[in-house]
Amino acid sequence: MNSLQNYLLLSSLLFAIGLAGALTRRNAILVLIGIELMLNAANLNFIAFWRFGLNPSALTGVMFAIFSISVAAAEAAVGLAIILAAYRHSKTTDLDQMNSLKG
Amino acid sequence: MTVAFFILALLTVAGTAAAMGLRNAVHCVLALTLGFAGVAAIYLQLDAQFVGLTQIMVYVGAVAILAVFAIMMTHSPGPAKPAAYSSYWILGGLVAAAVFAVLAWAIHSDSASLQPLPVQPEVTVQQIGDALMHHFVLPLEIMGLLLTAALIGAVVIAMDRSEEPK
Image (tube, rainbow over all chains, first blue to last red; front, side):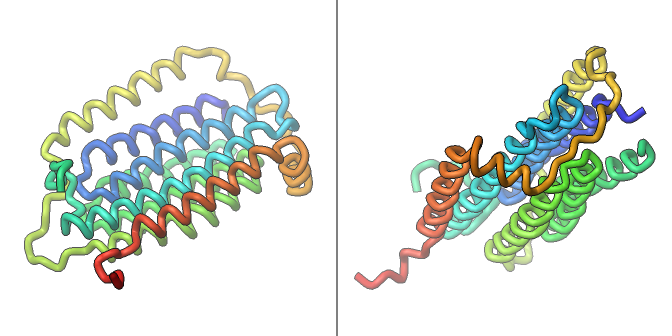
């Protein structure tokens, strides 16, 4: 049986993988990718709850997922731009070495 | 249908786990595209065709390319390879495992999520376009404004000001 539980378990596993990456990687770009994975897990939840919900023809879950994907794309662009600016400033993307707020 | 779901889930989890586990950052992004494509296939399996194709275009197409560009632009050619994981990686892994354990326990103990799949909804792209143009027109406009502001902001932030003529 292909129940909602399977999809929720998959999305929580994706969230945990993204969280582990965001917490343990040293490269700032990979930390950002971990955050993207967590957003993807949330989108999967939206779609799964929409599909298994009472009124799938209302399209609410699909709309929320589309807007969420757009926000995630904007976030990725701004995040990578910030990483590039920080790299230009400190010559590294290693988060263990970026430990000073004052340039 | 269940077999297809398990194959796709395995592919997705393998791709994302490799993306977060490999040492070479470019290999990480390549594995990440596999994970994103797996999520897109799961959207298609859930009858959300538009979202699945959007996922392929936005994540597999744009975000992965953007990440590869950023990795190549910040690649330091020095011989010393820095460690891939932070010094407190055990703590981070434990936190992630605890989060997954709590979520899995909550999902497992909830009997409402055991309901079977309802009848397949008829969702066409025309319906999605109608909803975007009528019911969701204000969020759509705000999203356009947000994307414009974000892209201009990204260009301004990443601009190299050192070679500016004074």
